Image (tube, rainbow, N blue to C red):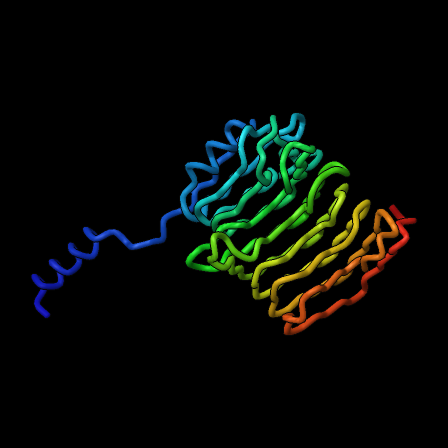
Amino acid sequence: MTPLRLSLLAALLVAVPALTPAALAQVEVATGAELEVAVASATEGDEIVLTQSDEPYLVTDRLANAVALTIRAGDDLDARPVIRPANEIGDPLIRPRADLTLEGLDLDAAELSEEVIRIKDARPVPINLTVEDCVLRNSLDGEFLVRFNDEVDGAPVVLGNLIFDEVVFENSARGPIRHEAASDTLWFKDVTAYRMESFRLDGSVGVFRLEDATIFQLDASGNPAVDIRSEDYAKIEIEDAIIDAAGEGA
């Protein structure tokens, strides 16, 4: 190759920028209003960081993400940030419509929403949900804390991996979860559930796993703490689970 051609090639390499993936946005929010705007305007893969835990994040409507999203507590906070309805919203506090990860939060329906988390939208691709190091709570008059519907207007709700790791389920008249949908994995690891009835499992799951769990029931309703009502579970694993049906540990 002649020196001239080498010079032209070098010039082209300098002129063409390297193709690198776009950086994901990290959005810091300090109020419920800012949180609502951040969720509504999020782009795929955004991370919303709650920067304070002194005052609750009061939201006036459900948080319904349309793109894959992470909502997490900021670093070095003294407590978990609380997300709570400011008024009756007649819907779940959080209604994922795409993949969602929740980390280090206190999610309180506070008698003002039906559930803390509910997936009830039929989507073209399965939705994945990860809840890590969170507290989910409602009043004793509430519904299930988490609910996955089986269908919407005849269209099935199909889910991917549903993972709850280091989660406390607290204060519900019904139970921590009602699973009616079809999903690949439903995994509870290092969870505590108290002052409620039972995990209710309908629908179908490739793998249901309950690991390092402590479950206290509210009453002697006669329902088992883990109430599996469907035979459509390919694999069920319960390991190191302490179940107190009498509720004495609550």
